[in-house]
Length: 113
Length: 113
Figure 1 (tube, rainbow over the protein chains, first blue to last red):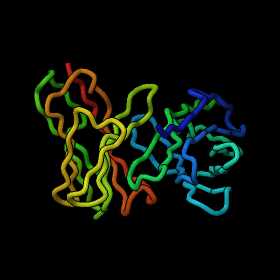
Figure 2 (figure 1 turned 180 degrees about the horizontal axis):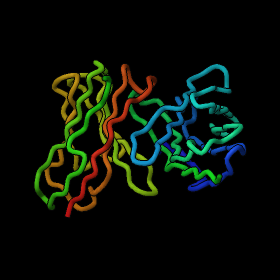
Figure 3 (figure 1 turned 45 degrees about the horizontal axis):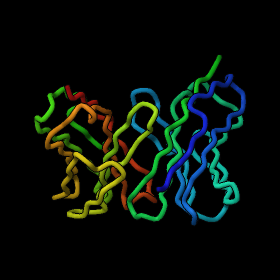
Figure 4 (figure 1 turned 60 degrees about the horizontal axis):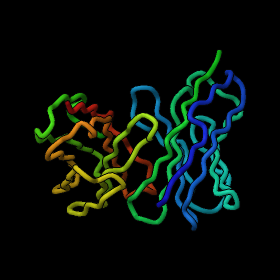
């Protein structure tokens, strides 16, 4: 069965520090990949997506992610974290089925002042 | 305002009492889907619909039913709720499927006693 692995359940970074959230997907061919963010008590918002082409994708709020087929990874990065980035982040895969989405279990980000 | 509306926001019920959680979108989106969110498990897709009268199972469809009789509505039906269906439920829609950003509702917190 397809799966998305986010190895880090909880990460704490200082405001202004860089951030990398890890994600590994399982689909053998090139999947559709997404990162969504969920602020406390809210629904989810799309940060960025990858379908094909350039392996470095830019998203909203200064986030970017890099697709690496050799590592089956799609890690999310931000050069300088802001306190408002504290939230839960989900890596999501669509692996061939037209409407099926597989979510990772999420990484909760805390930001220290 | 473009939105996905779920009702109710909170629901407490008893085992075996049929219930329906409504979901409506005003954006003329073709794709709609339901998810449940449980601590430590992320979001898991229950059902999705690519268009009117077209529905498919997600990863955890057992114990749930859906219908898509009209484009804007996608109700989630629990014919005989059980305590293991206590969860936070999200409805989402997008213009054409998973390739488009999902718009999420604000969630329905269901407790089954």
